Length: 394
Image (cartoon, rainbow, N blue to C red; front, side):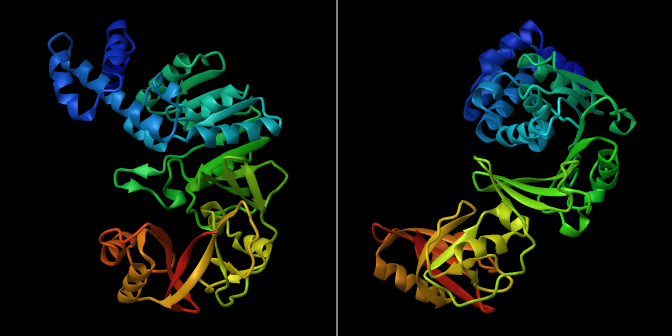
C-alpha cells in the first residue's frame, strides 16, 4: 500500500485495531517472529504498520507521554521526534489558561500533543497542519483520547489560516529537515519571522523554538522563556501579549519553579571555594547565571564557564550544589592516583569548557571499581587553565 494515509486508515479498522492489541508490547528481539506469524492471516503492510506503531508507542511511553496515553495514541516517526513532552505541554497550556485564553489556533500541530494538553486544560483548539498523514494521526489522537469535541483538526497551509476568531496563536515550526535538526530560525518551516508576524495579530501568542536560539534573534517585543524538565532543557518559548515584553525567565519542571531575569551584570571571577554550583540548563540558556550567583553569594570559576563557586552552602532550586575537596591541574595520572587512594568505585565525570570526553576519561582512570566510595570530577577551566575539581553532591 503506497498511500501512507490509506495505510494509516487501515489501522483504524476493526482488523487493524485487533492487530494493534495483539502486537502491544512486542519485544524488539521477537518482532521478526511475530511478523512472520501474523502475515499468515493479515496483509503484510498492515502487520508492518501495526508493529511500527507498537514500537513508537513504547518509545513515546518511555520519553514523552504517559503509558496510558501512549498506548491509545498514534504516531509517525517525525511526529514523535517533534512532539512536546506531556509535562511541558501541560505547563504551557496551564499558563495560557491562567492568562485568560479559552481558544487557541495551534499552527503546525503535528500529531496533536500540544492540542491535547490545551484541550485538557479546557481550551478549544483549532489544530492545523499541511501534511495529510500528520492530520489523520492528529485527528485519530483527538478521537482516541475523547477530546474530539474540543479539537478541530484541519489540513491546510498555516499561512492561509484566519486565526482572528481565536484568543491565542501557538506556533511550533518544523525544526527538522532531511539532514537532521535545523538551527537557523529562518530555516524553520515556517520561518521564525513569519511566526512572529502571525503572533502580532493575536491577543496572545506563544512560539515554540529550539533552546539554542541566539538571544540576538529574539524580538524585543517578546518574553523569552526557557523550559527544562527533570534537568533536561526541552525548549524555548517566545510569548507575546503577556505584558512582560523584553523579559527573560527560566522555568524548571516539575514545579514549576520560575527564575526571572533582572538584568544583573556578569558575576565576578573568584577563586574556587568550598562549594560548586551547577546551574540548571534552562538557567544557562536564559543567561541567568548571575541571578544564581547572587542567590548563593558566589562568583564564576572562569569568565567563560557557567560554574558558580562559593564558600557557603545556600540551597537554590536553580542549581545543583557540590562540595569540592580537591582542585588539581588536569592530568590523567594525577586523577588515577587520587581515585586509587580514595578507593573509588563510582565515578561521575562532568565537563564544561573541556575537550575531554567523560566516558573516555572514565575508562582510562577507572577501568574497574576500586572500592565503595563515589566521586564527582568536574573537567573545566579555572582562571583560563584546564583544571579538575573533585568532590560530591552537597
